[in-house]
Image 1 (tube, rainbow, N blue to C red):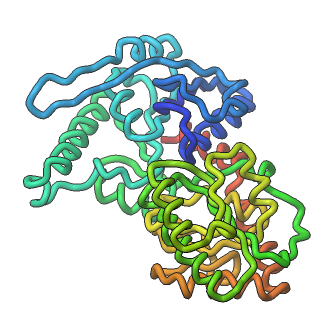
Image 2 (tube, helix red, strand yellow; image 1 turned 30 degrees about the vertical axis):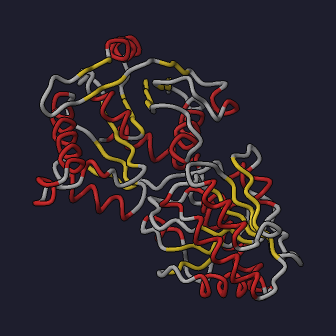
Length: 372
């Protein structure tokens, strides 16, 4: 079986990490030849891409409602034809638009729904009076015409929330539920955890509005007011980094809240922490929550909809429905203050995370490739 994965670029992110993990695992399987195509040579995961059959093919599509579309896809079309894949599996909306503009109905096409892509929203009266919504709808109609030209499509939904969304917005196409996965052994650590004397919290995420690091600063302020000896490590970077820096400084939390930027050794931060905290108000799945659990960390998180599949309340962590910093701090301390509870939750978290290992995931993915 010849399988082609397409993603725009290898940025630092969950979609990119998963795409690389899938490709690496696929190439270990007998009878499988896998190739990865990106539109840019940007790569934040050189250690994951070094052994892959990876091609950089610059390609782009500019759609216009009133003018002619501009398609820069000739090189991509040739690369697809030369590889002659049985399966084409795309990641992220840019790859969706660009790859589907090519013609190759001989393959089975799969779209990985890493989130509830806003472009697929159904038409309603608001669409007529909002330029962005109208553009999104135009892109959706264009994609549906390209799905038809290429012999159909299968959506891979990563959470129950995402599955429900695409079953409403793309009813005529097959939607398969397959939660994302991690390299479990890469994050797992033998479970001899005890909560440390100094509470160590960690969060991983890009600095964008939906990741909501502002809320974690509010939580840190509550812990500080209670005279808790704690440290919160924020891993990541992005447009909101400076804003969060100012917020930390204005609340005199520089000794407690550390912004580490993008780091290569995420697993080491997880292994050295007590509890993983997550503040995103929208989370399509929450791959980093599974990574933290594999490392033995209980999780305290806000409800981001997609991550509802990952929390067994009181077993591997707590999910809060409201952005209540006081209650969030209470949940953290409830875990940290009770050694027996902490150990039980840590063990359960690791066992729960095991079901999301990349090896059985790829078994299920190959079965989808064969049967859909």
